[in-house]
Image (tube, rainbow, N blue to C red):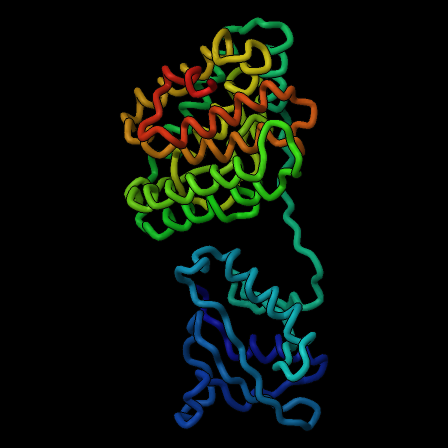
Length: 363
């Protein structure tokens, strides 16, 4: 972390109060009695600091505070940013609550930047040319033909996951967190279930409740597999992959953290081969069946990760809830939706997923 300069803090506070600020004291909050040094020697992230200033002839006591990195959903920079953004937006709305003067950020150069006037945040990325991978799958579905390039691209995507998953993480708490979020995150299992309308012919509340309960059981299985923590993409599906010429591609919109379970990425993509095959044949087979098997067999052959078949089940359930969703896919036939829910329930009931039994899971 960069060293925070005394004069930099004084300059920052002057910009916040729009008047010249003179710092009279800085020290860790709670250690006011140890006032042997008025100047800041070292700044510790996660520690609250008392700053006594004079501005406009008035003395003020301020507290500069950051969120300490740790478990309980504080592992990522974005987690900690979320907390202080919410605090600044809400403290002043509650009677008798301590007032928030500003929302700020430390820069890489050791500066303090005011963000207090912000009402929304954004990101700017490069523009990449290419064609989304789902267009390839749409063509195969429409023409019922697969090219040599289609097979090569399938293997290129599998190889990509082999490469990124080879980097392993050591903070096992992140794996447990990812297992917890697989259930409770608004974009994951419970969030998807909550988005389903009532009075559907192919799934009712009891059916969704059953899936949710089985996934809770799977969370306790996943928690014991934290040694599998790996670098992941987190949303590796055909609408987040841009192909250019040949096998050259770029991925988009990495999601929900840098570390997790490799099965997340494999199921996210491979369930789409199943999805398209169901729409064409009512089962896994033909060209999409070949892509499905090639994708998985290449990955297993190169990683030797046979344990993955003991953890894919809840990840397939999550992605199954996505492709069966009447919100995401309103024009899907009821027959296909029923088979997807059969697949979800059946895979959640097996201890070990078998690639050769996919069609039996649809029954």
